[in-house]
Amino acid sequence: MRSLGTQATAMEKLSRFLISIAGPEGRISMHLTQREVADLIGVARETVIRSLAELRRNGVVQVDGHVITITDSDELERLATT
Image 1: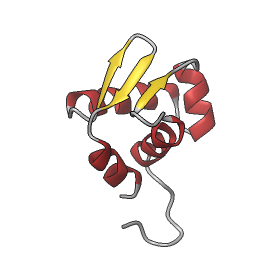
Image 2 (image 1 turned 180 degrees about the vertical axis):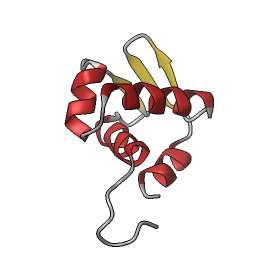
Image 3 (image 1 turned 45 degrees about the vertical axis):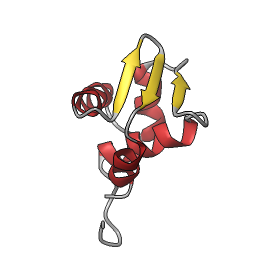
């Protein structure tokens, strides 16, 4: 768990964001650009790209065009609170 007063990591921010916009089946129809997501969560666009790629590599999400599907909600929750 993070110490009081420290800032959330980019992965925490992206994980929280994905959880907050996901539908009941873990599907997200993304109508935002990577830059818009980055601006919303307060990180660089490149960081969003790297973090999303890491989530895909680790089997936490699947990306098909503009649709993101959360495939491991427990791990995404863990990442959101690390």
